[in-house]
Amino acid sequence: MAVTIHINHVKKAYEDNVVIRDLSVDIRPGELFTLLGPSGCGKTTLLRMIAGFNSIEAGTIAFDDKVINNVPVYKRNFGMVFQSYAIFPNMTVYRNIEYGLKNKKLPKDEIKRRVEEIMETVQISQYKDRYPNKLSGGQQQRVALARAIVVQPQVLLMDEPLSNLDAKLRIEMREAIREIQKQIGITTVYVTHDQEEALAISDRIAVMNKGDIQQIESPESIYSRPYNTFVADFIGHSNRFSGTVLDQANGDTAIRLQTGFEIHVAGLKPLKKGDELLVYIRPEEFVFADAGQGMEAKVLVKRFLGKYIQYIVDCGTGEHVEVTADTSSAERIHEPGETVYLGVNTRRINLFDKQTETTLLEGVESNV
Image (cartoon, rainbow, N blue to C red):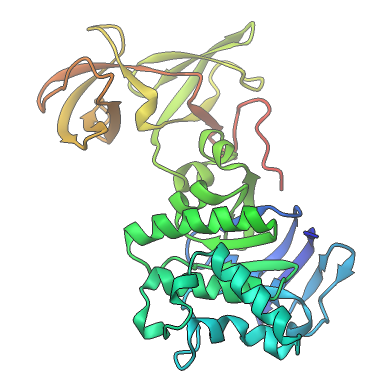
């Protein structure tokens, strides 16, 4: 049965260097929960605290109701998949996978049944007699995954498991990991700095920075409704504009961007005339408008990328702005030097308080 991981006010420090100051989160049973953030943000440190590889200076970590702070690593009942495959080069695929079960001194027929089942699950049965040096990177990672799962741990921990694979294999393996994790239903904590990977496989994502969690949400919500500018800047790409409130009445807020263009946005928290804010517009949230009906811009660069066209434009602010258009729906392709007019899908853009850099949209929470 899948467990809940309760992390309550934990702290990790190396002498005077505090890596994690006061972090709390509950990871739900059976979910694939991703710790996402830049290098040095504390995500791997937190994962190692769950595993018992790092000490805990304050707070508690529990599997369901059992606090594991002082439980030795070998008694914590977790499986771990590392960045390096960490499989034994002198053992066949079968022997690698059965290793943990033999250490548990299970009956031979039980070991055989479990190994064959997990090899079938991760689709490596045909390689059972091969040695690691005869396997591709993706196949080796499947072996590492099978070895971690076959012992039936309560929790699966994965630390940058795909970073050593090429781009095509990463996509293939992330889909395999997602499918296998859901099939088995094991509570999984996954560490990565790759936002696309996190968005593709996670049930929920915790975006971390400097030892703190900035926001916890589903991939869709993290991308479309970031809680603060750090999350907005880290997840995907956004064009950043300064704005000033002109008026707010009847749920509608009129805002003038630094370009002079005026937009109207619904669903904002109470604001007053003259308040300054930050407006984040993703490239796909622009729409090409008729002459004089949008923000005037000059096309500097056009890149045809198959499914979509990427433009770099100058809106008169001196900063380059990225705009993308879907190839299938674009009425025409604009060329460098051309003047265009850009409207904005105000239902999708994000706005932040200039001082606190947190969202101004009603209903968007950090969930921390």
